[in-house]
Amino acid sequence: QAFSAGFRRVINSKPLELFYPDELMAFVIGNTNYDWNEFQKKTEYKGEYHANHPVIQWFWQVFHKLGENEKKKFL
Image 1 (cartoon, rainbow, N blue to C red):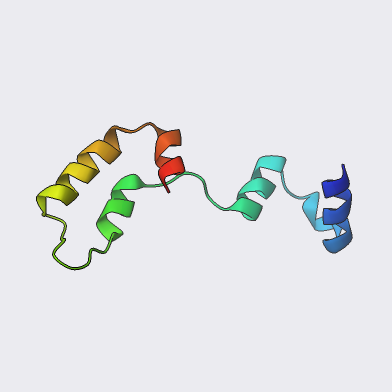
Image 2 (image 1 turned 90 degrees about the horizontal axis):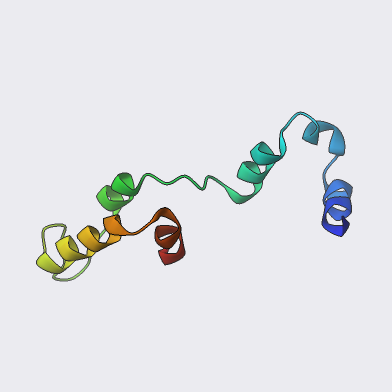
């Protein structure tokens, strides 16, 4: 309740009434649904490492076997 009261002091509550709680949460904390394949494609490697390096290939094989929550914790 204290958080809600403080939040409403900072932000006018009228616009907040236009959103469902899950929409507000996504607005405040951002998107929590990740495209892991896109994440892999956009990853930049340094030094001797590259997308086809055996260690990198192994990493992604293991990473994609993780559950959704484990992947998020890894981030």
